[in-house]
Structure formats: C-alpha cells, structure tokens
Image (cartoon, rainbow, N blue to C red):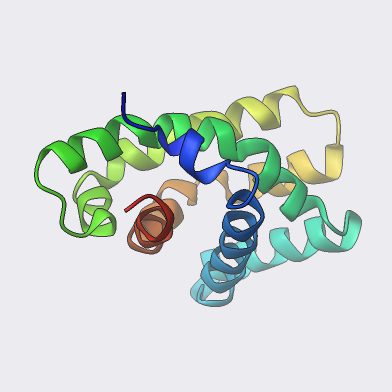
Length: 148
C-alpha cells in the first residue's frame, strides 16, 4: 500500500521541515494581502501573534494531521491522473478544497475558549475561502516538495 500524505509529511525527520515551510507560507500569504480585507487579515494575524507568541506554529502542528487527511483524496486523484503540478490541481478545485480545509479551522474555532483568538478568526472568516484559494498553488507546491 502506498504511503499516505500523513505518513510522508508527519515522519519524524520530515515534519519539522514541513512545519517551518508551512509557517513561512502563512507569513508570506499574510504579507501579500492588500486592501481592506487584507488589512483585516493582517490585524487579526498581528492580534494572534501579539496575544499568543508561538500560537500560529502550535496551530500548524495541531491542524496539520487533519489538513493532510483532507488533502489526501485530492493527492490520490492527482497522482492517479498522471501528476503534474499539485498546486494547479488544487487551484482548479479551489472552492471545494478551501471549504474542505476551512471545516477544520471552523471546528477548532467553535471549540476554542480563547476569546481573542476566536474573535480574530471570526473577523476574517468571511474572506477566508478567498484567501485559502489564493494560497492553494503554494500549498500544493509545499505538499509536492515532500510527497512528490
């Protein structure tokens, strides 16, 4: 049986690199935002980072297994279809992939007792799908870097 994304990307020698790359991806995506919604995202991110240093890294570590599970069927279909560029594959299914991934963060926010973080999340949730879709090419590249 072929190794799953979780097997590959959560392997002890790989996971720290994936987390570092994921954190860099988040930072890059946030810094690239512009306009009113971009300002809201940057403020929410700054609030979270200021209120709880290390929280973003912690959340990446916590959410990564579930995110990889959500990405697994897309990865399997991508591989079965002959491969190519996984980021392009994800981008072509942007609405579906982004909503699938946001199910995880929505559930996490709903279960959180950290009011500042929940408030920051709710502030940006309306534009979250658009922001996730914009990140899918880079997310796909990150996954393909390790699993491809």
